[in-house]
Length: 258
Image 1 (cartoon, rainbow, N blue to C red):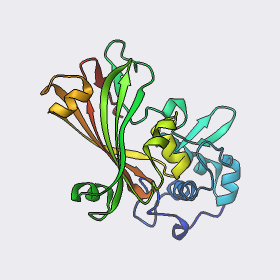
Image 2 (image 1 turned 45 degrees about the vertical axis):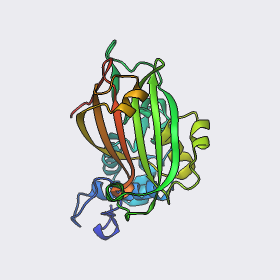
Image 3 (image 1 turned 90 degrees about the horizontal axis):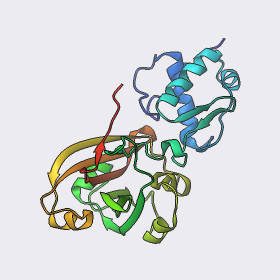
Image 4 (image 1 turned 90 degrees about the vertical axis):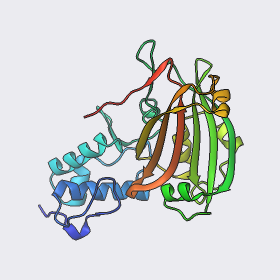
């Protein structure tokens, strides 16, 4: 079989795809599949060609394609479904709706039912130096700032502030957010074409300010968990900065390390 030449493999557009020209063949195939995902050849929720079809397309063995797809599935870019094929992952799927919300109920070590959302604000503002740096924008560039509360069992648990690049999210309004019934990232994916691939987080303990305490219905100075998240799309391009305050008297933050 004819291998894909290194010059044809993408080495900058896909998550985790880097550097050396002579990367393993399956990594080159992974890069090419990622390029097709980024270009929208196969959209979220759609089935991709079979391993046999991709092997023919790229002139490599089926095993090489399988290894590339295995890695993309591990990275949550693709989803294998027994007997149905391999699909482009989507945040609209129930099993991935809470991929980036790792809050668990203390009562039963399971998520305490679906979260209720209340949007407090959505406006177009100028990026501060700090927000611009996180989103790789220029200070003063337009960003969309969203403030919302997540409630579990009618109790406010998470207060989120989000900043999104204005150029990518033109037309995002409080009304549009309030009318959408699915996960927020599914809205970004379906209506703005922005796919959240992975996230980087910083976690620290803080004391509730008077304003935040009022929203979360706790006493000023109460301990909160501060979670700052920078979410990235293809090519490790930052597309969201999020600062969340978690009230953890009945919940805890859970992460699985491999």
